[in-house]
Image (cartoon, rainbow, N blue to C red; front, side, top):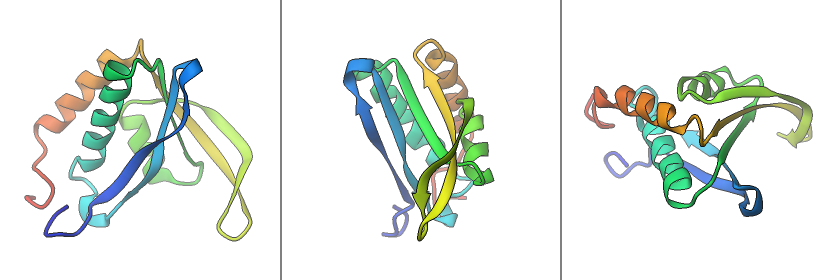
Length: 129
């Protein structure tokens, strides 16, 4: 929060403990948070908990294939693009959505974690730009 106004939200979902898989999603960000590193920091904290404290082997992300901002953010983590599911789900009053899938696996985690920490090292705290 900055000045009592939420910056956004992101959460775990679609937990498949038996498979060692969890999804991070339902993310929304206030435009005031764009470019601040808030989203990258949230993803770092959630993935760190998933891999290092809960023992998950795979963290998945999905987004609307037309959402260029979200896809760029996932690629910048970096999460690996794994493909698109055509007509994957129904959204916005019955519209069919193609979903782009990304993932980070435990083998990739050390490099992803280092890249995120490096990115965040020079970012000012939200609200202090």
